[in-house]
Length: 538
Image 1 (cartoon, rainbow, N blue to C red):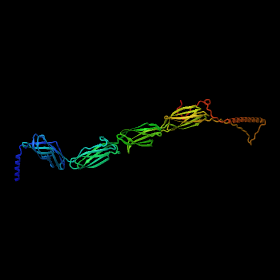
Image 2: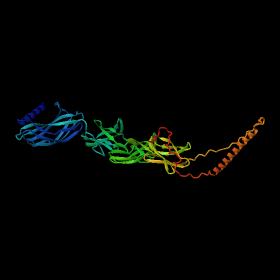
Image 3: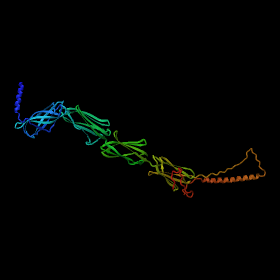
Image 4: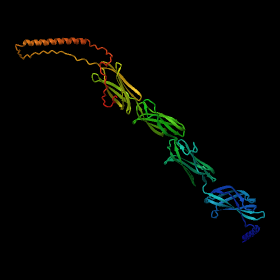
């Protein structure tokens, strides 16, 4: 009872000293907010403004409390401010105070209101209760993740990457607490479910701003395509994930392939032209495989220095032999094929006279057999010309145009030639503006005259045969026999005498080059035994 009485006396004395205006309420305003990590503390400055129209001689900080949005007081907070007493706080005047606030780890995250209560005295000693309301954000996790970014190290600002370049991904992490936080960071680059690169780190996030950074190399053997970049940060309390699609390409592209000529002669030059678009300077391999049918005839490979921009490459093609060829051209870097194309061209060789023979088929008729060789894979048009002369005079001269099939084409030609004279002949085949010829001489020997012979026949009767001669006619018969024998003797003597003179004159003189016009008729046109294959002379 004694203690209660003492308390009542003190209360009466205190109430008697309170000015009459103590029931009035005035507020201080602020634009500041406080963020606080649960289980941690926060320090800072609050700027309070006397928003009322009263001037205060003395203002004294009294207490604080925290309320939620429903007006319930939330325990677990502790606050200290400095200074606690202010003087001459006139209207619209602002004072700055420092604070240190903490809360227990079991406080739920959210937005609360921190109430500050002051006792303010006017110059006439009137007292006012002044409140200040400060937004208070209680944060459950210590790390704040800023949005991650990714860029190409060699070409910042590019929306795609080239093989051989480096992709950089990074983010800022703000630790609002006052102790280090251990995090684990992961990065991966994948295409169609296949992971081509991955990495991970364990890092300590110090209080304040931290940067986590990965460099992802894009190897030359990575195929072209759109890759998925995944970036993950996690710790016991929270995690952050960032993904982005990154197109990847090599940067060298074959955009055109052309041929200098699709048909050339043997030994002439022929080239293929490649047009490349390149976004980089790099050395690549150029391979040319030439096929004749299904057989590889030649393979060449060389290194090409490609510059950034448009490049036109010239490639030599083999033309050493006739045929139809297909050249496969491949552009590569290591095992990676950058572009492929093929061109088809033909190499042609002119026709040739591979053989020329003749055969005497009668006294004054000769058949020439001209063998025309076509080494190409297709028929070739040619012009077969001929000229036959005797004693400087042209007996035959003409030409035949036809298409010669691949292989050996035999053309027979029949001519009437003078006998006993040297005949000159020349045959030529013209194709592809080139002429191949064959020529020679021949001599038709005149035939020998038929030999004349005398035959004496003596008939004697067989030994076992008996003949009877009539008595009256024997003398006449013997006279007739003697006359016949005499005539045969005369004829035989004349024949052998004449033959001896002829044999002495059989030494054949050198043929005289005389015009055959007096001895031979005008030569007829040659007869061709191939039927209608050759055109008739008009």
